[in-house]
Length: 365
Image 1 (cartoon, helix red, strand yellow):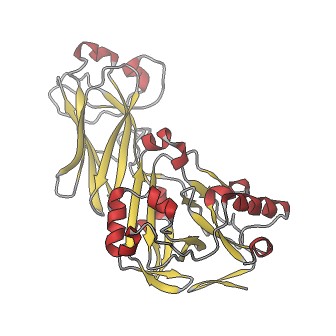
Image 2 (image 1 turned 60 degrees about the vertical axis):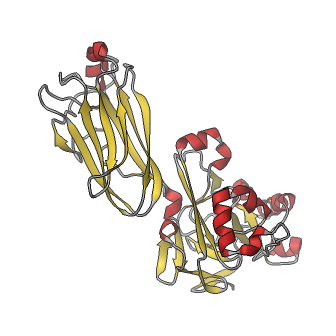
Image 3 (image 1 turned 120 degrees about the vertical axis):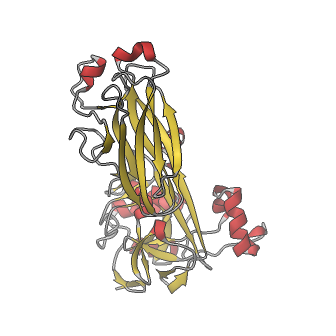
């Protein structure tokens, strides 16, 4: 499913609907403030003299995470002589009214430009986004438009657990997750949140999007997004012929030549979550088999120093450079993975064939 904007009516197409506060002016078009001919509706953060504009909206987040509030803002042409003074304060407050992120914004350009405010939410709960007028109270305030707080969709991936399907971002250490080896307790959870700036700087961080049903057997049950190197289980007679085993783990990026699987170029931000067990396991993400975190050489290079220290406290043997991790299934070399996908395409095969999904895992039919 696509990312969701937690802010209602952030474009102000419906006027001030969804917003509360005082002296909210969201009835005029962009052209009225900037003289640029645009018919987009915007909000002014200084509606009337001698009245302080406060415009706010509450929303709920499902767990601790890092997000980014974005919006477009500009100085109206009538306020050019107040450039640097006219503006507003933008902040995100918790349910006790404490600001967990804030910034003073004083635009100096008569063209709408994007502003970003990173926010770290410490826990699940209700929070409030608030804009408060700053500067001369002269009814000539700055304008805002396109207010967004996008939910990172990857953390919403559903994982099969002993209490039913659970969003992966809500899984914590000690939770019991269904694997091909039955229920296994989670020993460590790693999270990495990437902003639009991160994705723009390094496009290789963009996720792979696997459309519902693209793997075959109706899997995944919903659209699934994973990191490029995250491995999915392939079960096919092609695997048997190539590797002498019916199943193999293949990086998601290698599957992008198949219909319904591609790099998600539209991703605005990403919330990657890694689950670690006592052994390398196959878990069920949106119903389809996918690997848990594998403590191989590539993972050691990918984890932060802080994450490696956390993992070593749980698995001291990981400290040793002689440590060898054992994978749940055969992991072909890169060229072998490419050859496997090419043969699947040539034979018109999907990655998943002849599987029956059971409560404790996937069983060959």
